[in-house]
Amino acid sequence: MMKKDSIEKTKFTSYQIIVIALLALTQFTVVLDFMVMSPLGDILMKSMNISTSQFGFAVSSYAISAGIASFLTAGFADKYDRKKLLLFFYIGFIIGTLFCGLTTNYSMLIAARIFTGLFGGVIGSISMAIVADLFDLKHRGRVMGFMQMGFGASQVLGIPISLFMANQWGWQSPFLMIVVLALCIWIIILIKLQPITRHLELKIEQNPFKHLWHTLKQKNYRIGFMSTAMLSIGGFMMMPWGSAFAINNLHVTIEQLPILFMVAGISTLIIMPLIGKLSDKMGKLTLFAIASVWLMVVVLVYTNLSTVPFLVTMLVNVAMMIGIMSRMIPAMALTASLPKPHDRGAFMSINSSLQQMAGGIAAGIGGMIVVQKTKTSPLEHYDTLGYVIAGILIVCIFMVYRVNKIIKNQTTEI
Image 1 (cartoon, rainbow, N blue to C red):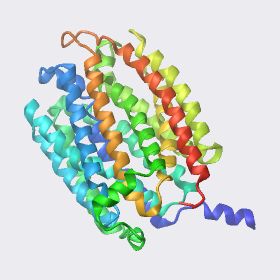
Image 2 (cartoon, rainbow, N blue to C red):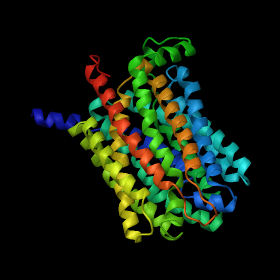
Image 3 (cartoon, helix red, strand yellow):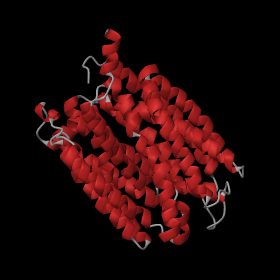
Image 4 (cartoon, rainbow, N blue to C red):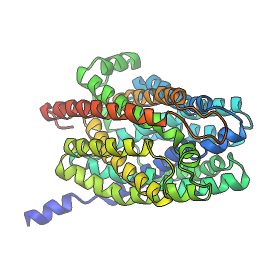
């Protein structure tokens, strides 16, 4: 009887399932809007005649503006219904994405990406706060696993469809597709999601700037912030150049590129729920450490590849996605467990801010390291990025170890 009760307690309610689905769909659109820049990178650089450093700035402009927005909203994040915050920032994201789809030159693209980042960058922290409010620590790994399926779905469906549309109707068309889909999701959130206001009953510093300072001065929180910032640096430093490296260095064709992203995405969809369960079962720190070593090896192999059969390129990309997801899910679950309930929104906003600003800076640095002399020449110094990322991965293991130690020492259950 006890075993049966225990099993039943692990099941999600129908409403919780709806919440997970809505957050996953929201993640799908936000992640796709950001991730699609990488596969469109080669097309963008050639059509706009821009350099790798200019493209790096186009990527980092979104991330840095998103980071600034998250920081500025941190003091207010725990003072409003989280549903209302999600709806407000999501509609701003939709408007920004529409601007991206209407842009015709590089200056307009930068302005549109900055505007989109101001709203889109806050959505992730709001979603994380909602998860921490509605699900206990024991089940957050599973929830994060399902939520991050939006990441995999963006590669399985979003990126291949986006590349097809870009080839047929221009690189702006994927952004218009995202606008239509996101608007439908926004309406469903408005109708289905219940108000999330439990945190408003707790004692919170009324002045938003004092609340922001209160959150920043907590030593344990700062360790979490630094851990998240380090986690984002490696991915942002390498990600923007994925399609350009595949096409110009590995000689992947334009027709093969959607297949490459689709296969990596399918593998992500398959492993995400498994990683979530494994994270809750074997321990989040253990899984993170193993995945970091795995990813270190794969990154060094990938960044040093020359022309290889397409099958090899696909397998290495799948191996890389396994490593990335196996780090991301346990790290996110641990970080979400650091703040107290009344600090959760502010913590997530600051955390998201530092994550995106660090990533934006990393993308800019990556654009200065990687060089492409002509539109069709191979990328140079991509292997240098691999060595830098390997060093960052080692630091990340230590940082997440410290976060895990803090959580173990906490006496109050979050």
